[in-house]
Image 1 (cartoon, rainbow, N blue to C red):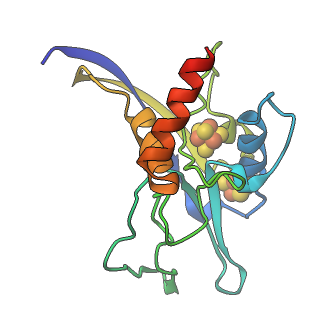
Image 2: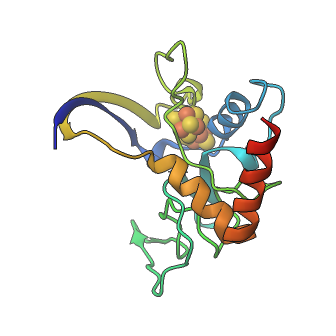
Length: 179
Ligand code: SF4
Ligand code: SF4
């Protein structure tokens, strides 16, 4: 398979510095509203700050892949004497919880690094975080050329899981007829 150069974008998370202000959630939900900034709803954000005030836990987590089934086992982390809830570090949009799902449709949300035209200098959540929790880095790597759109596939799979294959196919056929 052909190799191409790909820009790898990373956000390092210095979680100890997070104070739970949630500016990252607010700006992410506004940036992804349609039209942009027409609504602000942190439930639509692709970054969520997992919070347990009594344990002094503020953990920013970015939305990752959609998964149709919850996993069979769970992990519990204890870091610096703080016990985190099961699934706290997980990035998946998964049936076991409401996190990383579009509140109205239930469709999965995934961080897209604020890809847009014109490109942003830095992802919006990084720009909004005044406590230097989110640190943006870029590097180039040689990777195999992608032959399919994984995001599109994840969205179609989620629709099929929710409505069933026949209903999705009937809807696509109806849309094509009306074009
Ligand atoms: S903007 Fe920064 S400090 Fe505020 S909640 Fe998000 S990561 Fe934490
Ligand atoms: S990088 Fe962009 S899409 Fe991802 S969580 Fe931050 S603001 Fe949202």
